[in-house]
Length: 368
Image (cartoon, rainbow, N blue to C red; front, side, top):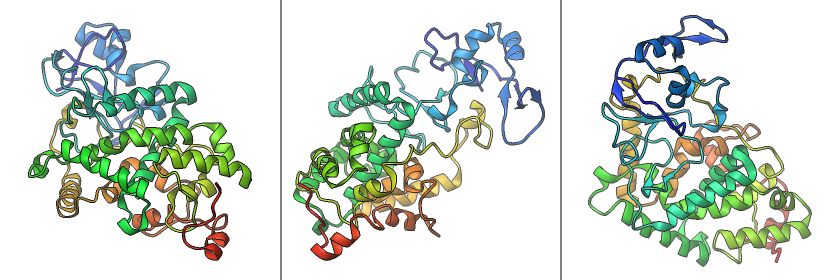
């Protein structure tokens, strides 16, 4: 059943269990539709005895004016169990903003939308909690749109680096991968994969480095340098090499996700989310959310778990996760028949570094 509470700080939550009355809205008119349901504020207020303004703190759909839905995830998630422990009733589902990955108060990993399995506590990985605070500073500096695009792009970069063959990566990237693998052993201990594995925990392993990279990708100053001439690009290459842990990094035409971003994406506007909570199909009533996970999601999770157990190669799982879809397949991307083709294309260039790479060699032109 849906559960609500009176809210002081505007975060969603619950107290007593009761069923929510829902109506469908299309602009100002209420009309039936199978794709969306919205609660009626007046009916809910009369039923619960709480003011509509108080209820709006718990249910974003009741807010007037409406929230900027693009800044929130489209899929409600289970949050920090300690934050929600004071709420009786059923499970608490929250609509998190895109920038919320960690409960910094209780050091708990919330992560991106996944299969809604409990996340890990981060007492042994304080650098992940610190990365969340850096993420919030990045948000205040550049706004939600640039931060959202930069963080997902950084996740994609780390995913590619983690998925590359060992002989194709530099010593710096190899050392970075060793750090990620150590974190994975903490987050998903050996012989507990079937119980502990989730793709969300793999994002936790790369989160600190992703935020370091995102601080450059979101900054208009560095984006302008990346899109500039060779002299300006030289400054960007030095900085991004430091951020990815590879001071010797040089752009190349093949197998280089950063070079692709320089050529195709840095001079274009941030990519928005594919959908929003208000536009997502299906019923978002808590009673429906608490039901069993769909068979298709369970099948994807099982295949990812089996792949992880066999290979322990996590980059491929991150790249195929729906979280990074908006930056793997952008509005201006070359259309591919399969998603694996889009992943392959996301680390290729068409013009800027190709001639030099073919003439000098696979490692590309040296800008430093």
